[in-house]
Amino acid sequence: MNPLLMQMERIKTALRSSDHDAAARLLVNMLASDDLFAYWSACSQGSERIPNILRYVSRIVFDPDIPTASVNLLEGTVHLSPDFFLEHMTGPEDVLFILLHERNHLILHKLWPDLVGHEYPPALRNWAEDVYINAMARRQVLSTLPERFYSDGDSMQLVLTGRHSAVDWQEIAYKAEGRNLLKDAHASMYWQAAELLAAIQEPHVERDEYNGFHQWIHLVFEWWKAKQRENRQQSKDMTEAMENIPPLIANHEHGPVQTEMPAMNHPDRQGVEVHAIPDISPNDPIVKMILATCEIPEIRTKFEMFNDAKVRMVETLIGGVVSQRAIVCEHEGYSVTVPHTVTRKDAFHMATGAAPVLWQHFYGMEKPAVDLYVDVSGSMSKYYMFIPYIYQSILHVVGRIFQFSTKVVEVDHGERCLFTTGGTSFNVVAEHMTQESVRWAILVSDGLSALNSNLERSLDRQLEHLVYLKVQHNTHRNWEKLAKDVVLLEGGS
Image 1: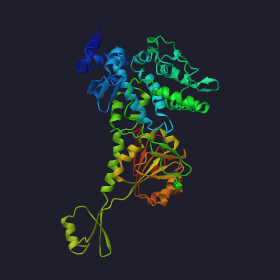
Image 2 (image 1 turned 120 degrees about the vertical axis):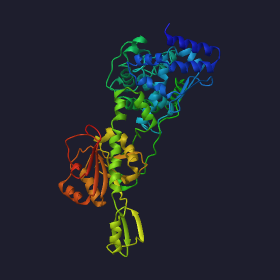
Image 3 (image 1 turned 60 degrees about the vertical axis):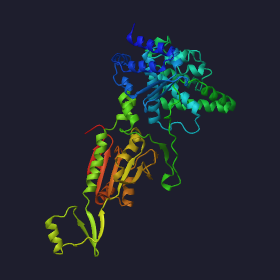
């Protein structure tokens, strides 16, 4: 018998004897074994990243007071119902599945913190996320836990599984041009899960154009609103039915954070679109966990696009420039520049009257305001999620923060929204810098626009120091002509 299956049987034997502590110890030992790591690496198509999720489990508890499972990867705790484990979990791949399930919720909430608004019913959101996540997790590990758990369920529950053909798609229907878009989206989710479909004896399904989580969440909400328009009681019944679906993994604590919409009464915020920005930092514990455990290329790309060292280079550059500023002192109407250290020769010159002897009005080091300009045009959408990280990385040297597209909007350091018209105008930015008499600035952009030569000459005379964070390599040359330092964040050195 497979040694891992033997260990699973020992765990179940302990649970049948109600020895929950012994069962937990046996499960911890199994999770820590080399056999399990090798097994999970094999069933994860040879990936060594996916089994790394084991490092985020430090405590397992068999808890008879919960219905299924509860996972908190940030705290490292896993709570399992003894009955759920005995009845539904048949192999170690099922344990991995529930861990990946929770991790995938964290990925969605980190990337799209308020993709659903306040009007989206929580039960509907949880159901929609679980449908997507159950499909997403089985691309990496072959577990049939959802199919077994929801085997006797109605169509609403069967959508949570890969049993596409068993769903009554007349009941789960949102149609456009004669096609059931919910059915097409569900088919696309399982299109790449050939091993799973074979394991549950599900015929291979045809896929249609489908744009992932964004589209799925939107379709589910439109379906619910259509039901509400037809019959408000019907939509209420549908929401209650979703609330009564037993979750495989109990509701997680780290749900989406609803961003409070900013005030729009300021003139420079008129005529712009407002979008929430995901807050992603290489130092964030969730981001670190995702990079350590996630193998999906399109997800990894979103988290590792920037080289952290290059962003930190900006801190060094600006910090160095600021530290070079002299101490400004006044005496009897004079303003003099004094070095940070006074040599014996300096003291001699001051004693002879070449400079004021006493600094009676000491003003300290001059720290000029360093204004941050961030491009939030449509071509920068790939990089939006890194804006809060850039804010945080250079917070100690930045005065005002401006976002620009074809308008320039001043924002607060704590605002996690972007204001954009979609287009780009560097001339508008240059005019704004001139009007605001900006001397020290950091500018973040992809460089995909043009700068008027007259404005360029004017800024060249005005700017003392510009650091240009160019997010990607391309042939456009504009701010490079004005910048004292250029940091290329992607696609170059």
